[in-house]
Length: 497
Ligand code: GAP
Image (cartoon, rainbow, N blue to C red):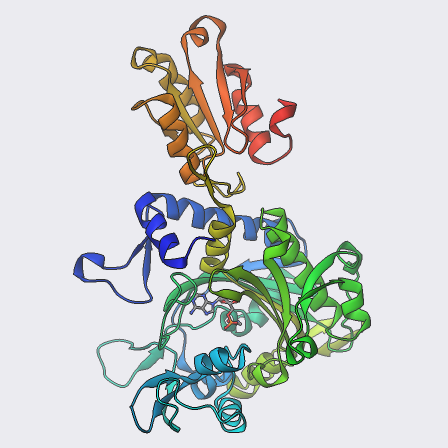
């Protein structure tokens, strides 16, 4: 597999992603999207939004502000709890982020672990300085929220949101009332989140500014039954339970219904984990590179009563790309307490006013999904002699590229290109040999290339070439739009053309 550094170089070279402020030496943990990256990133967000919001009747969307009243973050517990511990060696003075040293030494995930639990683990396992083996001391707790000041007067502290979720809780009452949606239902949001990470690393994996797609799925606290669980209950997933992690076992395949039967999680949490796992495989991630990992009790975030991650097998190990927590009624209760507002609603089924529970919170990092898609799609095809980025055609930056066989066919070829432009993201290329032009499109993941040649002039048809197989077919220009649309949406495959 390609190293993370090589992936970052590839992304820069091809115009996907650049380190922010590079002309000034760069800004660690911040990235900018180039012309291809912005398309890919938008396609990923659109795919999540379409699949989990627009196609459903039980999810509605919002787009909240990045800065909120600081009271939101006091109520949510982020002001008090959203911090990392920094450790320093008493002898050589080397500094460590406590959860990273736990991950490196104990081989367990400590992401989001509360400071008290981190201290316990360091002491219990007698973790020492990795360089000189001397004692470590805690030097500080560092809150990960970025602070800013609102307006010209000093003292008006506010925070950039560290998760999109709290906007959903803070708007819960008005959104549920104005949309007249009934329990069980979800509210979704996609947008930026900011965390002042102590050691951003692994390219897009751990940044200081990133995007999340989150759903808070609310249910009656007395009814966690999922009436649509049959969609996924027979689906097999790779899973590593907390027990298996303690016994150092490898992940194994398990059906979603067996996870429920073993009381590992509630039905809605199982349903949403299944939906997102299914999304990733449906959008091309290889099954062997995905697994679900149950959180150990000691790593549960302050708001979670059960949590599962979907992990991807990156070159730097199995790592979380998606989190799914049972948040109970923790957040709504906190906002009721702090705002002194009634955030209950009337449940039609039980005919009672209830404070709903979040049975499941699917929380998806967009950058981590993008990175997983890129690693999975990257294929250094030795036979072909070039890289082939085998992205799902619904995600690729360009849908189609159009070439004239020779420059004197530019007129006719441009007419085809201009007609396609209103429906597709297209690229026009008339320079270099046709082979070189195909290779350039393979490398950036364009699924289909159209070549306009001498026969096109008289027969009103063109050649369409399939990135993944290099197969070519003739297709009438008048059918191009319809056929391309169906190919890209995977309603037909290339052989059926
Ligand atoms: N609302 C719950 C929540 O924010 P989280 O596990 O802290 O939970 C959810 O984050 C997802 O956000 C992660 O699975 C990951 O995909 C993404 N994420 C979190 N921190 C990130 C970072 N520093 N850089 C990039 N993505 C991050």
